[in-house]
Length: 114
Image 1 (tube, helix red, strand yellow):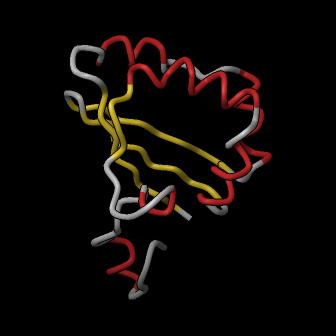
Image 2 (cartoon, rainbow, N blue to C red):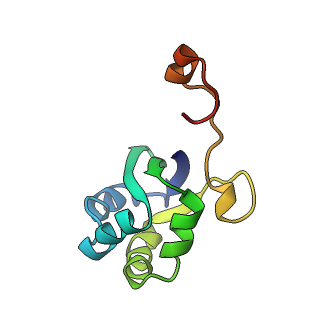
């Protein structure tokens, strides 16, 4: 599955976010495939961060990482740069941005997040 997320940096901390997030700790990177995260890409425009996560099950991956020491340490490092995630509902389930349209899906006549 592919999941899009939208978050914002704290005002004035955009460059610090970029520098800090240039890499993630090796221990966390090693955990991603174990929890079903195959790729995670982040783009930034001003304070807005746009994420594309390719994974088996986004909510299961977040749950698996929730108390993981590597993730806890990383969140303590990167968290001060992040103001918030835009959400459409409660909890982690509200984080993904709803899919509106995908060219390939239209061309192939398929629906959803194919």
